[in-house]
Length: 290
Image (cartoon, rainbow, N blue to C red; front, side, top):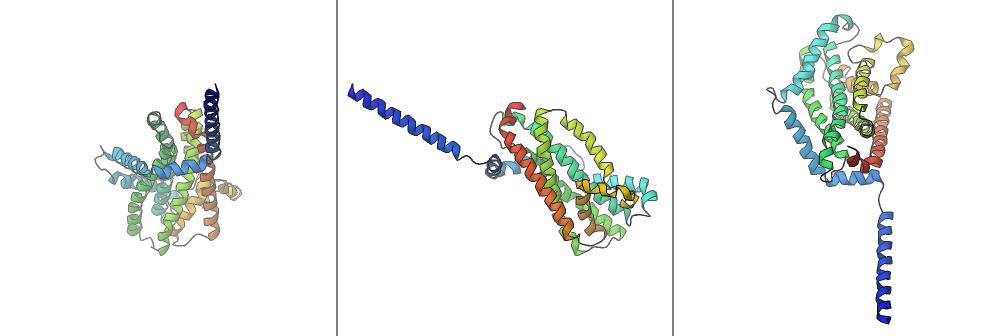
């Protein structure tokens, strides 16, 4: 009898220790935002493979291959220049560079935000089979977009040479504005992806919003065309500030003001942090809702 009681006591003690250990591990669990970031670092090789896969699939059956990434904005620039140059060329110096630079940055933003949501849907089957950090799919879309925008800069520089646009050392700061756009696009993509999990028509609605957003951003028309009483509305358009710090080194050969960099940088970082926090809180539910 005494032996059985001792054995039962030992078992109870072990169960209590196990319970305390379980509670201790749970209490030590990091914030979802931090956990998601650490998991991404662990799966960094997977990110490279996914980006490589996207690029290969996109150009696998294309006759022009990677050259299409450079020709696409160039052809759009030619069409826009032929159609609108007679209207806007007087108000805009070097309209071809003006339009092409705007199209390149806008395409990067719009394509990556749409692709990020699609990537998450595509990854649904994968996440139900093995563990993959959900944010990996959004970051894959951004990484693929960064490769494409770097290739798109080649025809932009060629057009600058052909049209006699001045080159300045300020062009070396283009990566800063591109990084800001990438952060803003990633944060917005994470927000959209989270909403798309619960509301499947978010992507279709976003496509419509993108169309209106394009025309509300001075990409093909100059800032001077906007009536003075409506100029303040541009401060509510995050893409306007990002576009301005991208264009200034190209068109004026000047550095944007420190205030412009600080404002756009703060907006981009804030959007990224909010989107990451919102997405990370729902990350555990994604595999069950897709």
